[in-house]
Image 1 (tube, rainbow, N blue to C red):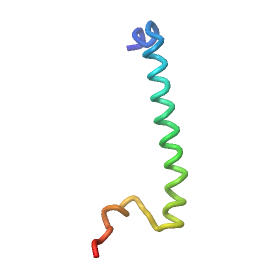
Image 2: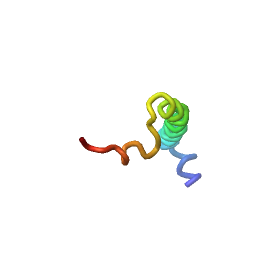
Image 3: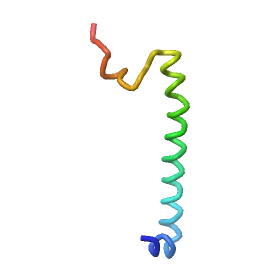
Image 4: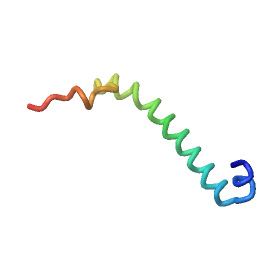
Length: 53
């Protein structure tokens, strides 16, 4: 796999972009989750515990 990434610049660029998007997306949710829990009471099981009227 290392040789493929080394030889093909387009694949290397796409893999790097996907890796960065994954890191930044995880970081943004890690920052937003405590705020959502504090301000709105939305926890990790909020969608599962919602009750229909």
